[in-house]
Image 1: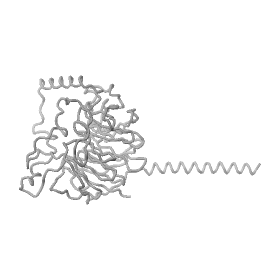
Image 2 (image 1 turned 90 degrees about the vertical axis):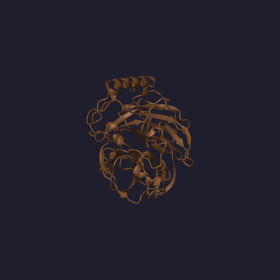
Image 3 (image 1 turned 90 degrees about the horizontal axis):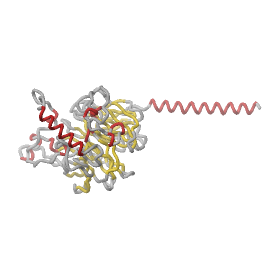
Image 4 (image 1 turned 135 degrees about the vertical axis):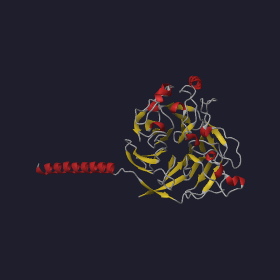
Amino acid sequence: MGVCMNRNRNRVALAFAALAVICFCAVLGAQTLTAPKFKFDPDWPKPLPNKWKLGGVTGLAVDKDDNVWVLIRPNDLTDIELEAEIGIADCCVRPPSMIHFDKQGNVIGSFDAPQGHGMAVDSKGSVYIGQDTVRKYDPKTGKVVAEVPRTPERPPGAGGGDAAPAAARVLGRGSRGPVAGFLTPPGGRGQPDPAVQAAREKEITAFRAKYPPTTPMIVGGIEEIRLDEPARELYAADNYLGGRVMVFDLDTFQFKRGWGAYGHALSEVTTSDADRAYTPGGPEPKEFRGHLTLNISNDGLVYAADRMANRIHVTTTQGKFLKEFIVAPKTGVGGSTGGVMFSPDKQQRLLYISDLTNNHIWFLNRDDGKILGQMGSMGENGGQFFGLHMIAVDSKGNVYTGEVFQGERVQRFIPVP
């Protein structure tokens, strides 16, 4: 009897000991989830060939071989940056819009497609570029292979930007520069003519009636492209009505499903601009505010970053809303939640969020959205950012960034153990 009781006591003690170890490890694991550290790599990329100079970076992707694809806006370059085209300086000339770098930073390929915004590369090397729709390109020839259907008409007032038709190029002649459209002219922008404004609002109302939120094709321009190859699906964020998550068949490019903020079915998305109104630091809008980007985690969750509202919405791949993360809520102008990437561990425990306005990379706990730290500051030195726009991560955990505005460069950051 005494021997049995002793054995039972020992078993209970061992069970409690094992439970204590499990709890300790769980607590320790939670405590060790901290922001990663990186060091700037001054040797990547190598100097560009052919007297090229980069424009603003509007797309960034790492392929299966950990080589890097960079989509740029050549039309950002000014006259003084194109003087080699007319022989009055050693540099520079307009580059192609798509440039392919290897792991050492050497250019290993390029092709010149119309400017765009957002891109992806599949496992076979095909390149997808967001323009006024999503187009699939042969990387060797630069030819369009297929494109996602879009409406024949553009939203009123949405004819410019990255998807604007390219004007005839004149050697040595560039644009007003990458920030010209963002600067307030002397004396302010003035008040719009009431009659003109009323006519524009009427035009917008008519367009939205003709093309409701349920329109099963691209309506505005593209902000982001992501591929879910195992499911044979293409995700695109178009900017119509503040942004819609749109899912297409990767093989046929036919529309499958879509949703808005808080997982609203497209039939529930409103056309009222009041539902997109937002004051930094105030209540979040009912619908997506603007500049919607996204990414898909290994465990099948979609992270949609509504940059102009400083938030990230987490849904299932079917659009069921799960939770909302708020980042730097008092950020105005361009907003704080730009590109979405994941840490390279199998569990993808961290979110990496690029911030155009504050020029940071935010590191968030992917489970609860808690901010663990940040990296970067505004400036033009190596390792700083001036218009941090795009972000990508390779299999080794190296972080690649792309800048617009005065940055106009790609940089690499190496993990520090």
